[in-house]
Length: 446
Image 1 (spheres, rainbow, N blue to C red):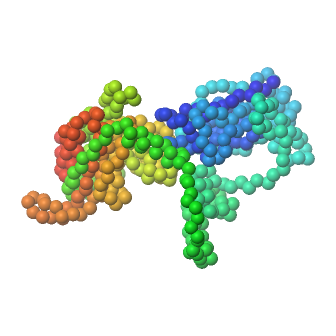
Image 2: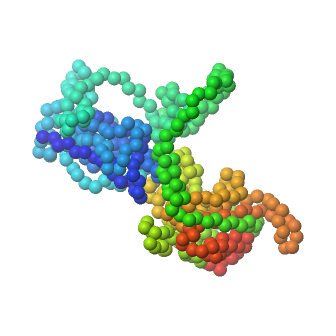
Image 3: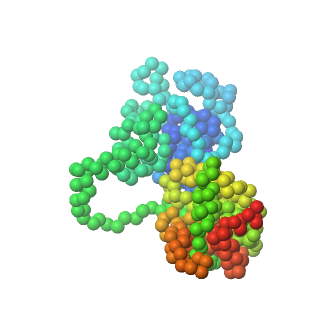
């Protein structure tokens, strides 16, 4: 006889306590294979597909789209069968499938490619068709929903894979069923939704409706969940637990920008300002290793990290995220630039994996891209330090004893005062500023 297995939401990495259901990928009554993705969830780190370690018939799903499920809570129940009995039972039911009870570790997590092929569903044949049959999965426990009847439906299949595209359409009031996708096999892309939004705005009737005065309604409460909830919790914890201090200095970046232009004039990959700043950070951390550290959970010690895993702020579709360049201290400026570019592209596409968003030991925050000069950021817990870089802008500056127009930036440095005193933090920041003003100093470290 079939045995019902309950699959619970596994730990998706680094202290995450739950995940929000973005999209169900299977239906109740559907036949699934071992390690087939059954649900797409959004964690504080990324949007991931969760595979089920059991093969069989889905008898129940737990959680509606948009609902948060705690780690360890049930996701789905699956009716599996022993190899000896599954053949006769499914053959008698008219289902051409092989379902075996297999239990093994999950294959791993990340943003996976959706698997093609048609879904198999028990009893999914139209009523009255030749060989039509209904197989009711055994009820594993009270209150477990089981597909026990076939209801004729006419579903509209919308060719959208990305939950981010669906969310954009929902927020902008775009009907996805009315769109023709520009992607492969008519797949609806983000650009298709954005074109529909632009066309809607250009419509005189719609524009008039938008321009019409609308009476003010009651205040609304926006649920704090998903990425925003995780960010709020992490920043709140950082603010409560870390005695942070900030120091800053203005630096003349004219020579650094000249070096960048010289490097980019030569054949090969282009070097970004962020890559040069990242290289300066790795050199500075080798000189001041106290700052590549974190305080233990119980506050009884300081962990000095042997490797520099450099996080950097990047704006993605899900908001501001912090991808991590692994082993940044072993990479050249050109290699840092390539990895920074790859991770930035993944952030914009919403395809960063959990491994690419965790494990940082130091953060570089280039808030100059937002057109601002300075900031006092909250540390990325449990890291002990963060370098902030403002916009590089032409300003009057005393250079060589004379007033001149130079390219100036403000550097700010926030640090955990438990890991070092102000002299160490000031020494780090001054060294970084000196490298920005005289990039030739880096040759001493090569």
